Length: 405
Image 1 (cartoon, rainbow, N blue to C red):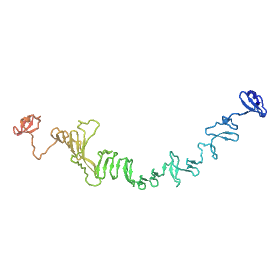
Image 2: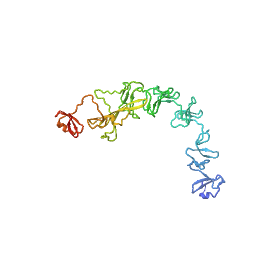
Image 3: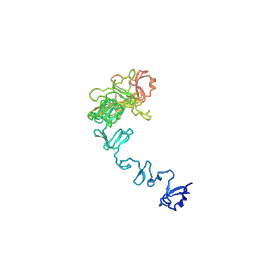
Image 4: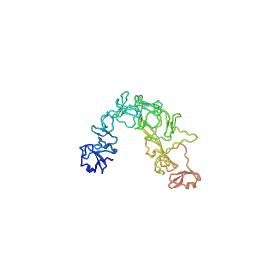
């Protein structure tokens, strides 16, 4: 026959104190309690599986909320959440700003950070802060505050490129390019050079501020597009355009009294010098501007003095000579302008226009015209011709032609 326990509602259970070992069953909550003779209502008997560790005896997860990664640790009175850290460390958590002596091991068990010997093993990638030392010589190789580094540079092929001990630079084959002791380049330089350059005695060879070079260049020179500009083998300059920051290019021998010459040669063609004036506006029709000039001067202890010039304009060639450089005076010129030749003027009005006296050491032949040709002239007082019709020298005076003899 079935065993029946003391039963009733949960409210009725709380009104009694079951005897020690007495069982009580609540009909409304369907739970079983056992009496200990002291506790009102008895002690709950857990007849189902535990759904949370918080329901276990001696476990407290309500006083401190567990965090991800925490474990239950005995605190002396009960189990409570705590960080999962190993034994033997100072404290159970890493505190920001604190110092720790630790070792860090890679996946292959290689010790990367050796806390026992204060060493960092392996390659560094990314940013590094602080000074660095060589573990062999204990020499400081990187000094942050002084912004200095004493390091050799080695290529991926394990070839020494820069030696910090002697400041030598090497190419990929190990040949020296820059000798730090001599402070000299050795070999060819490919690319752009910026700034001034000095020789081993600190004499300035190239002054990038003044735009001057005081040195001898040996070898050929090529442009950015590999065009040969200076052919050192055949002593030929192949550049088509020369440009100077001061707009002045000087050719010649300034070291001794040897004559300087410019020689133009063309094969089966005419050699030419073209002096051109360029403009962004239309300068045609302006006969007062100079297109080009050839100048003659002396340069001695009295400084340079211009003494002669040939000027080309749109419709004229002007020739001048003045020992004092008085080229503003038109009487110092003779000019060829639009099939007219002028002496002492730059604006001749006749085929021959002489401003001043003329001395002829040979004969002078006047124009020979018939009477009909003479009468077709726009005559002016002072004209002289030889009339082949009358076989007479005639002059135009007082508005009419008259025989001179």
